[in-house]
Length: 104
Length: 169
View 1 (cartoon, chains in turn red, green):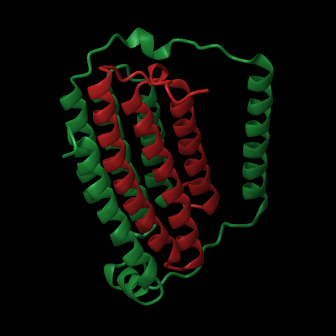
View 2: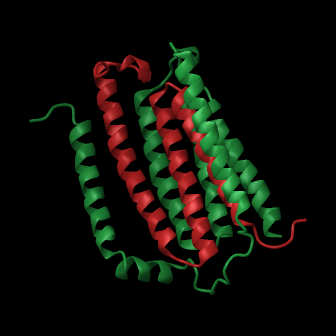
């Protein structure tokens, strides 16, 4: 039962499950930091499927793409956390629902 | 044999990802996220993408999570957990509609994935996923995206400094 290599579908399923967990985290939680972490989960889930296809098709393009995803994640986290600190300075809370000034 | 390694790591990753969104304290969420990223590094090693696995540990589990912990400690988050899960006003019809749409799309994706005959991967050379192979691809076919990424990181760095400064002079 446990012989052979891991089929591509397994990796894709793991990726989909992690992505859905990330979406649920973004939709359900109201803590800014936890919402940010859920976005990180989603980015990581995408990396799994990129590298799974790479591994399956013997390419290196997907690894470059996941490299770029990591770059974007690093940029996003640094700017996003700076925004959170700036928000926290104006209003000492991390509850997303209380930041509704730009909402119509 | 690979499946025997894959299933525990995958289960651990899913459990830790659930831990991230179910934990009431942000520090606990961050710890779960670090564990999940280390588990994913194991998945990448299983996929023979060793370079990406190393990057995953250094960049994600190292740099990004340190930044997260730093901000959590800086903000000193000690708010009541109950307010975090408060249910908001919902439009029932839109909720049902979007849920049905999302479930339909996911079902179709999983269906197509399992329909395809994707069980026999290509024969991989020994050099697959090494720093040399990925680096060669990065500096020949993907030079422009690489340079653009460096610009992006520079812009993000400057943006973070400007945003986090108390007052602009």
